[in-house]
Image (cartoon, rainbow, N blue to C red; front, top):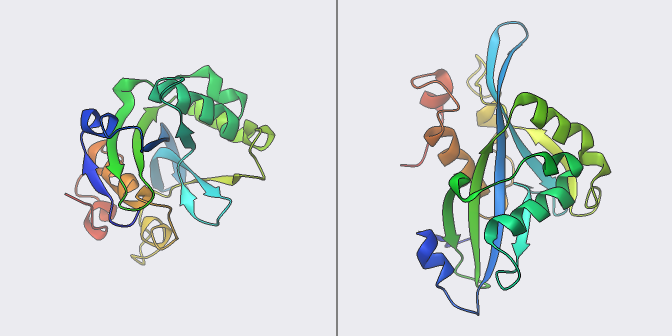
Length: 195
């Protein structure tokens, strides 16, 4: 969303009938695993490769006349991720931010939902059987929340990918706000996190 502006949820919902609403969710879970037996993963964070070749978060357009933001988002998650997404619910308490685009009157609402590692793995395993797999969604990817010794591999290299709308900024804000990397860690020092 080029030229997107952040706004409070109440203001986003009051934009009027000419605006469409899209909801997306970052799904994450604590992950005690070590990469190569020495690099702590800390958390597993899911993103998806979209039909247009860009990275984004699962979700999509919701119709506020028929449903709440969260009900629409949960429906989208099941369509894009499969039946394992029915085992949890994204709720208003998981809400993070809203951004209004300067272009085609779309406001994007962003949520972050903490899962158990078992729930997240079930989503990954079932995603290929989801209704939208191979169509809107080309696959899931975990975000590397570490930086390798070369200072490039891991999160810095991942952030060089192409992201849809404000997904890159939403990811970085969530990493910082949810403390998904250790404060003062190599990753936190090397990556420019938004204020």
